[in-house]
Image (cartoon, rainbow, N blue to C red):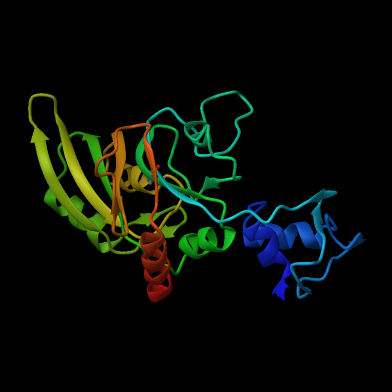
Amino acid sequence: MERLQKVIARAGVASRRKAEELIKQGQVKVNGKIVTELGLKVSPSDQVEVNEIPIEKEEPVYFLLYKPRGVISSVHDEKGRKVVTDFFPGVEERIYPIGRLDYDTSGLLLLTNDGEFANLLMHPRSEIEKVYVAKIKGIPLKENLRKLEKGIRLEDGKTAPAKVKLLSVDKKKHTAIVEITIHEGRNRQVRRMFEAIGHEVMKLKRERYGFLTLDGLKAGEARELSPHEVKQFRALALESK
Ligand code: URA
C-alpha cells in the first residue's frame, strides 16, 4: 500500500507536491470515487484516475541532456518554441525536467518521470553542487568575486556561500570567464548574482550537477543515467538534506 500522491508522482503525472494539489482540488478518483484527503493509501489493484484518465504505472527513467541555448526547460511551450523534451523523440514515458535552465542557458539538465526523485533533488535542503561557467561583460574585481563567495543580497534574500574561480580575462574585449559553484536553485540566480556586482552575463553554461558532467556529449545530445548513478544521486541528495 502506498500513499496516493506518491503513486501519482511515480506514474509521471506530476510532482509529489503537484499531485497533492490535484487531490485537494478534487481532480483525483480512486475506484471511481473522488478522493480529497491526502493520507489515503492505495494498492496496485486500485484504479487511480487523474482528470478521468487512468494513470499508467510507468517504469521510472532518468536522462541527462546537454541542453543547447534557445530551448525552454519545459514539456510544452505555448509559443511553439523548442522544449527540452523535443530531444527525446523515441521516449514514450512522460518525462519532464528536474528544475530549470533559462532559455539562454546551456548545459546539464536531468529529466525523469520519477516525481519522487525530482522532488528529492529540488528540495531546498538538498545541497547538490551545481557548477556554472559564465562569460561576463567587464573584468571583475577580486573583492567583488569575494562578495559572491561570501553570499550576496538579492531581492529574494542573501545567497548561500559559493565557490568562485576567475578562469580567464580578455582585456581587449573587456570580458571574463568565471566558474561559479552554488547549491541553491533560485530563478536566474547566477545571472542575478553577477548583476549584483555590476556584470552582465553574456553566456551561461551548467557544466556539472553533483558528480554528473557533460563528458562525451555535444549540445542537444542526451544519455540515460545508469541505475548506479541514480542510486548514487539519491544518496547524495539524502545525505545533504
Ligand atoms: N542561474 C541562472 O541565472 N540561470 C540558469 O539557467 C541557471 C542558474
